Image (cartoon, rainbow, N blue to C red):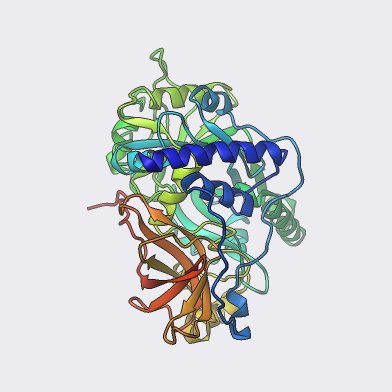
Length: 480
């Protein structure tokens, strides 16, 4: 119960901060939100004088990046289609990527909500994310220029995690999930906190592509008329299956045959027994490591459809509960998933970030690779020893957790610890009973499992060990 009381005090502090700051536009990658999430799961403690740690110039590239990932100007916050529902359920609302978003709800603490997701099913509103549709004879060629993935190998209604890449450097502009709907039609989702940067990047790239290939080569739509929710947890499939309308749907309606990374358009049965006016795009994916779905809900035929769907999913409160940003952050970290602006940014290429696997094997021939940053990325993949930094998982000894920005040090000479990295995300793992876990970037060569390092937390260097990720094994539904 102590953790519950701590969280409630922290959540009240978050609300006060949001009001005092006139609702700035904080993204998933902003220091503001990370402070809010941190204060929500630990009491405020005065910083003690820190131990002196030497910081050689050689590791400058792995210092924390002072980068802004969303507009910092004050302004009115946007609301998702489910804002009123959040308020009705007693949500603590905070500024997030230009939206007023739920941090947690009145019925569950952060830790309770986290564990509910692992054991039952939770529903997250992620409608602030940016949904795109790209089609036309040039759609495949275009996406294979700005990402390193083998999208030409994707079957229809199949998805892959990918990255938008910076031209020349190969730095990660954003992470994205791309779904091939048909031969020349793609649906993809990008981060809300990168909306302005992503849209400017895509607009410039699309205009250049059209200038070369014709105005009709690409059609790009930002799907503002769709809500997006994520139903995550071991009971998610049973809950959603009970709502599928088998009469109206033309695709296969048995969700047991819908595997991780696949999607279908299916109708659901509304409370009055009728089928939804339009089908929902149901993708078996998520950001928690649990089995689950992301559900894109159209609003063009009914503005109230998102609320109707959510209320149906919440019918049995012993099975499904609403969850907010705090639980989403701790769940994704346990699952070893990156948070843009912290664990990945333009300062890292996919190989730096241990995401080299997003580079399709068919795209690794330097003679034919045409994607942004190909020469840099393929050189790194061919010679990993040339990397200056590696993203790793750490378990940290009992005590205060290692938070973002904490220095990772070499403790081979305890009297003279030297900085060799920086923590990018860290917290006590609810699923592991409070074990301190963290993601960090460390000097190449110190990234191997079992390597013993130290993390400077306040005025003490705590022992840390490099471990494999994820900490919690993913439970994605795959063919047996």
